[in-house]
Length: 365
Ligand SMILES: [Fe+2]
Image (cartoon, rainbow, N blue to C red):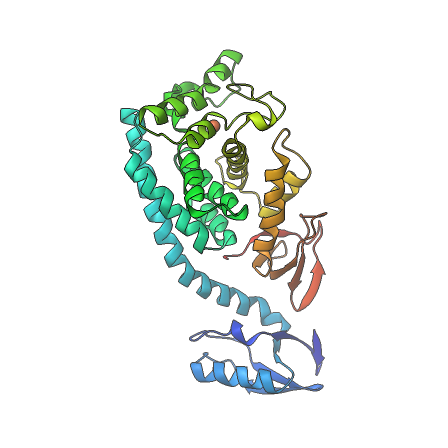
């Protein structure tokens, strides 16, 4: 923050100005303790951008009045997002269509179309490798509507499996296998009677026993559809096992649960948490990291949980975030002892967020 002639000014990076922005504020450059006008209320042109960059490099930075900062940032991120979004959206559109085709085939013929499943796994694998995790997570949340949960859940678990595969440095082929496993893990739910699957009230013990069969159904459908990969098959079957042996269907323990299955368990939980559902809003990545680090979900493979806790914060650093007072900040640092309250830069100040000023959601990454 810089006080000049009774007004508060804030430094702004020149790259926040984009061609065609129509700004309501004046832009200044600073030299020692004084501000000099660069241009007033401009429509930003290439020439203005070049001038701003030159003055920024020559003098002591570019400034605008603090009260306009949020407006400029919103405009900036909106334009950036529009560009990125067109690419991401077309990715996701294509992925949704293929995923729908797979699910419909399972629903009506109880077989998985393997060729299209493999194509889709490879496409998701490419996306995961080439696009930042923060954008992918944001995309999953933005595109999916609450009522599409069951329909898109397999795809999202496939995507998150892919991210974990990338983080643990698997090669491309293995990432694609993990993605495929995610896509298929719940196909057996089509065999569960809808009155049980969608029952709005608490399930009876017998009903829950039926639900518990779905990993076996998924496994059998995949096997019958000619899936030969044992890691994929066993991963599908074991995605509800728990480290202490209390899971289902085979009550496996610790290392008896295949690695691919242990990974999918965590992606499954993660997707359920970050998804907007009819009965709940999506959680912010900070809440999810916090819940994982507090051990809210018992009997998970802590090594894989830690892969999340180690990698997700890195992906979020430097990204824009919406704060609870409506301002936009930039994530500077996420402390592993306190995932809920990152250090952010907002309104030209470095702030340790807290219960009163929280990070609500990532802002159009
Ligand atoms: Fe499941």
